[in-house]
Length: 489
Image 1 (cartoon, rainbow, N blue to C red):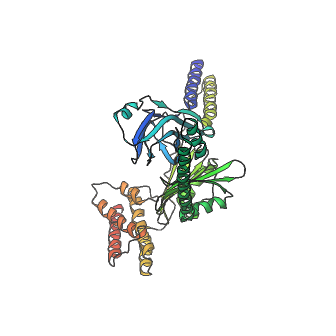
Image 2: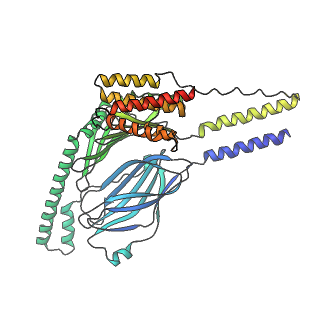
Image 3: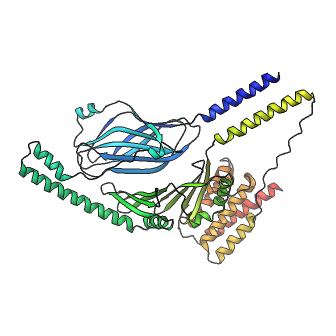
């Protein structure tokens, strides 16, 4: 009996260890190897994404178009942070447009957890008119990505072609010298226009307040700008920064008449903005992950003129803290954990050996002792803080003092605290989490939703409050608090 029990435990350990060692992967595939679009049309394709992970995998998606077959002009790069769910899904990829016939090679790379799925071998063409022959020429051969390490993921290289050498090859093929001179002059003029448009784009980029904020943040952390790239046609730009030997950061974005967005990506930790660092929820999450021995790593800051999104990675992606700011205030803080099985293998092996030894010793002694009952688990109690009525009274005082925005925020907080205490665990909630706790059949739900919405429009939307609106909101919130407290008693 003892040997059989030990064998069963060892077999269980082997199965768990094998399943933990089985590393998941993400695969990208394109249904076709050739895509044709009409000039002036925005190209878009759909990729198939398959993930063998059991949960969402965060990472960085890079879409690169490089000119081929004599196409004149610079390539294009798109970089953004995404999450890939488990199983099979689809991913829409926008390729931009072209005003002239052009041929590009497409490369898509998804970097995640120190690995990269690299998809290449796909051709994208822009033609003046899509004919039946063009449609039939689209090859339906499926193209699938290959897996590499993130450090080996290919980075597209590109640059403007040498117009003089192109014209010289045309002369060698039979082009008349005078025609070649005209072609060379025309291409030189076109290159000059492209350079001027690129210089204008990069000048507007470096004058934008959002980009300057990210540029200043990198320079505070010791980075120096090492390169600039811009695509005037699409408005896409890339700013490259270096620090020391081998540490790289970049700012990618899109600039039309105004800035659409700017995204800073760094494999190294950067200084955390003050509004984020001072947030209580962020401090709690950061304390949790650092308490587990996880060091900070990759940093992403995606900013628009209205909204800011920050992502801080810990322990090579084992945990990530995401923060969203709107209107100069923190709106949402979330913590995502990725289970890492490898450190648990040794612990599980030790537990199994201890169980086997304990069972053997027990059999030898022939002693049967009852197992003590586990102590009752104590429910965590939220830290003491001001009551909803106290928060509401403070909001009224702020309103009387002329601090209208602060008053609306305080009233909303009092309502959220009351709902959390009566329907939840008494922890701090967002507006969306507060509504989610209430049942749609509850007549209070509509009242709570309307009150929070009015407070949010003044607190974060910049709307000027009406004269009697705040008094009405306070009366409604006080009735909810009084009613709920009476039911609890």
